[in-house]
Length: 295
Length: 149
Image (cartoon, rainbow over all chains, first blue to last red; front, top):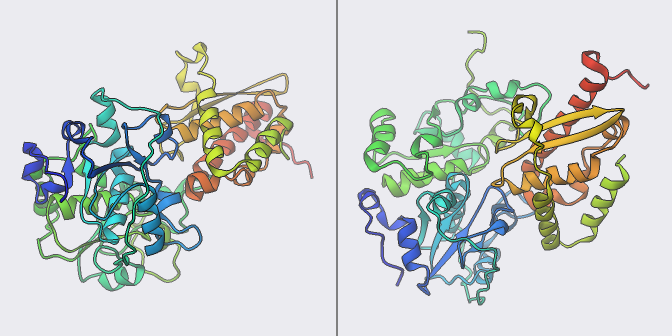
């Protein structure tokens, strides 16, 4: 059986309180043999500068992505990774990371593609853990490799591809979680400097702009349930049975929003379009919406 | 073309396995010289590199035809700091021409793309591009570098 849930009052309000833990809960349960703490960062060297004692590192780029095809690792690769990190199929994995848990949410989402059941986020991530003065160490973590079963990746339920998005336009809500400048396409006007890899700026037609950051508070934690409902339900009108697709640039910020919609608000049909703008903004003959910059 | 110092760093990285390269990058991050005191009250003279995900600033000075680099990068961004540390170690004191001739693909040759993902590498190339632009500005003014063709 997995670890117990965090009874924290803010967390208890969410639709799936079993998906989030506080630093205090993690400190109290760090020695639970069924828990593995995993750090996933934007900056791939950050773990080496100091991590939560006992935490393993999961590198979004080197560990989770296939190194040739633009895709995630396959079932064998995922099983090898989990095994090497000392994770069994029954392990409770607590993810945390830098930058508002972008990559922690991304890693959690990738584990969910493979059906790993008990995956949780540390609310506030690395930023809050350190702000609270909790211990970090540069000591290497050694875990005994496990037998992790080879389980197929389900690309249909929580993942969307370009073709899915094309047929989704005008049929269901699309949530663009990038910054307003990326949404309007104006960031493509920066002269001489490389942007992160798209030839066209703008957004997918019908997509609404709801920057991921709106779901977060300054200390890195998620907003309380009522504030999230005000944004996504009251303001954006997302309904419980809506089929929602979220996207950003390469799928990390939209993992953050995917987590909010799926686990905090409890929407059962949310997909992350990980191809995101780096695919859409480079694809030939896909429709793009962009406000007239001279208007 | 690379400066001899930068070429040596590139060679070291090329010869090392992945895990070792990560450690070496971390060492350069730790070894990045602190921003000199005189910039403390003149932070606006530093240029922000907007392409980097974290606040990252660079200042360039050209003295007697030699380039000096100063960086301000937060400890929460060790990868970018590491890249800055490599530039500081490999380029500081080089001549204007040497800096302008640096081919930006050196980071790829070092295997950094494999470490930090090719996308993130672009933020790093942007640092070098801005350094070069400032070197041209300090040396030749707004008119830019005369064509050598």
